[in-house]
Amino acid sequence: MFSFFKKKIDKSLPEAVTQEALKAKDPMDWTLTEESTEWQAERYCSICFKHIGHYEVMSNICNGCGSYSHIYSRRAKRKIFNGLKWVWQYKYGNSESEYSIEDKEL
Image (cartoon, rainbow, N blue to C red; front, side):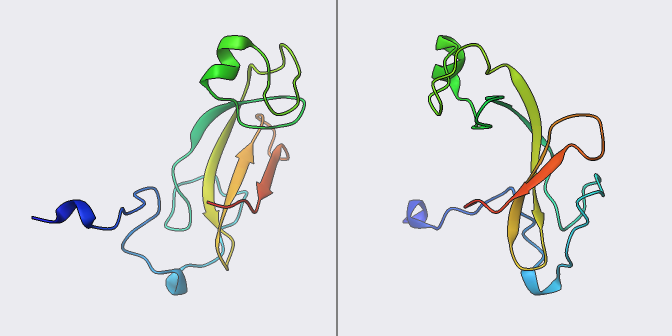
């Protein structure tokens, strides 16, 4: 009857594995493991590296820095476990060195 009060579960993180059982994910390992989530694609501003939303695409102006016509770059992102907590990993190109890891709020 009160099923709508149930806590929302984040389906993007592995459910069956606890953080104590996870090891730190090697960022150079591009495969899907228990310590990582699937890759996703997103657009970003090539000036300020902010994620671009629908309104910014339609106006062709970045809301983060105000730059014009720099929002059509794409990057891949996924969550990885760094040994302590889940962090974002971004990959910008085909070279193995073109990636970054950011400790943002998930």
